[in-house]
Length: 231
Image 1 (tube, rainbow, N blue to C red):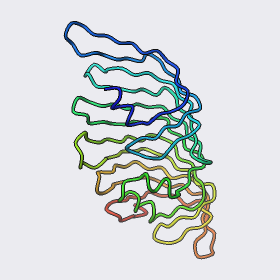
Image 2: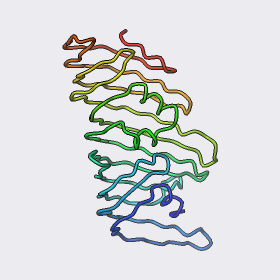
Image 3: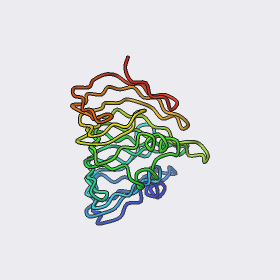
Image 4: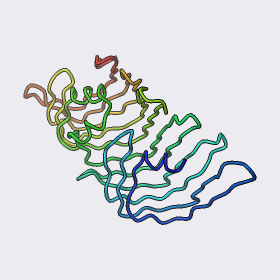
């Protein structure tokens, strides 16, 4: 059981903790880790192969009341190149080996939409990000949840509630926008084949066709590769 979960996160580094074994009569062996720390490690989720380095994390592992295996991260700080990531969350696997990953208080600073990030995304979500084509580092914070099935062949689904801060970026929203600065909030779901997302943008400034615009605000909606800006 623990090996299956371990294979989904591929941790390495200096691990410190205490493992407890328990068996009652003919019941299966139960393994719990009341507390662990990882220092100077690496981590790469099978469901999202975006390798993290210089990992410092703490948490615990055990069974839930529903007899699901749960790895809880009380805190995690890591890097991917120049990108700095902090978060907390859980990885849970049920008796059918269906799993979910929930990352709360996620903060990604100096995130870049490079090939490493694109290749870690599901294909159609990757195409969505390629279409937006954000250039330059940006900052993302909030909540992400991924779910997958133990049976092969089923797509990964996702849900999120995020705020993206653009310090001075370029992106495509039907037209090419340059020197984009401000905030974009979004809430959405990825169903394995298509995404739905609603949100609000509050841009301090942006440049379009050589003209500089300021205080740009409004809602947007994204569905089936169609982006609608405005109410």
